[in-house]
Amino acid sequence: MSYRLAIMVAGLACVLSGCSGGTTETPSVATLRSAPAPSSSAAARPVFAFDATEDDKLSMAAPWADCMVSNGGPEYESSAETLIGKGGIIADDAKGRAALATCLSLQPEAFEDHQKRTDLVAFKDNQREWYRCAKAAGYKLNTPDPDTGQFGLAEIGPDGDFGSPKIQECRRKAFKD
Image 1 (cartoon, rainbow, N blue to C red):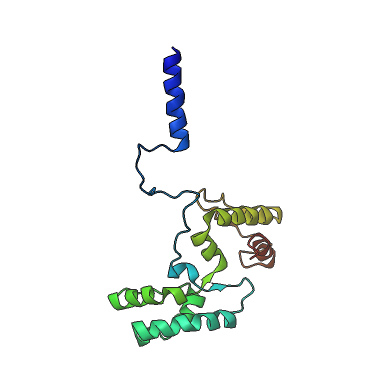
Image 2 (cartoon, rainbow, N blue to C red):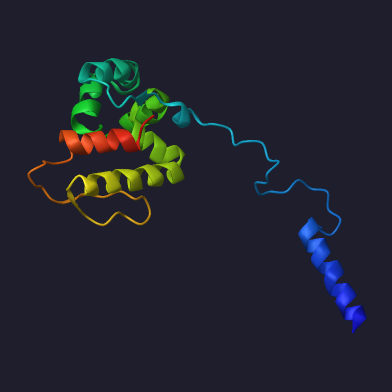
């Protein structure tokens, strides 16, 4: 009986200490000692400040728009305005898709979009904080998405919609950069 116990303890000690059968290969999974993952050009994109004006945004988007025209052609001449005013551009041809890929590192993004892409945990925390604040301010809200924490208005009341001053103040507090 004590022989079984000794084998179990030795086996457990081996598992807990990281025994791997004598191999000296570097683990293929991340460990606490792993070097950080290399950053991609997409991670280094410019980020719009919360209080950026339309002119500020257009100015920040100008290098991206210039890149789109250089790589995609004159049909992308107004890409900065399209990015700001309509939420982005759609490239439905190979040349346009290639230009978008080439120019991605210059394409600005909103702070929330950047955080959602690079730090989903912090994004969810900020979404929860924004939700609590907006709920406390009297907005009628939909249930937050379980994966992202994003939510919408269940109804537009006397305080207005997502562009209203109160909900934007909650947004600024929650996502203070």
